[in-house]
Length: 308
Image (tube, rainbow, N blue to C red; front, side):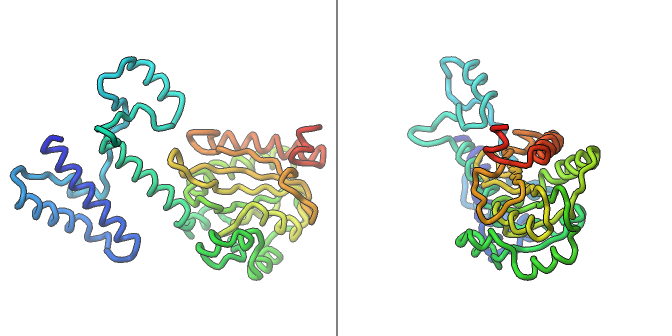
């Protein structure tokens, strides 16, 4: 590796360590620039070749090089390019001996960090206010309970039940729930375009919409309880999907007609992979209107809907 490459790698390692310390409350991110520069000065003093910091004075993040083709002397370069256009999978990344190349490994770590943040970071209060959502919580009191005891995410807290009874309109044809699920990033990335398109479309065909609610630490089945509390014909949950290394912003829409104690998963209609690299959120909103209209027309959802 060149001297410049060594400098970039050392600086990236320093930044990565500081970010991990910051996540654990052991480091104040406001001092990141100063600490990185100090660490680089120490390395420079011990190295024969000076190292240039990757973080400019007016920036806080490092952008990795674009991921093109990293295979050395490929037999068929055009074939690799064609394959990369058809999939987000990590192909054509090459290798250095028996391991991945440094840029490929760093990108993997960065994508993994984004996926972890999607799970553990909450949807912001400012976002909820901006979207005008009534906010409630599930029976899970914190993220640890939500992750380790899925049953708690399937029902509302006592306070959540009270709020919905007091603030949500009754007897809607369609009740909308926004649920963080396993990705807060999916909520903040897609709901600003999806929700207005969905509401506008439902209004345009004359359907009565309930008061949209946001459910923190919620799972899919919590929609059944909400539907019963407001006596909705159909309830739709816009919920963050489990993040992966390809994207942490994927959203799913689960719809069910009048859920009850005998409801099973086959009774739910699902549209998944809603995000900028899949079904665009605004387009998904328009499509969901058509699906909801069909569910209300035949009064069934899930597998039974497909049989109509």
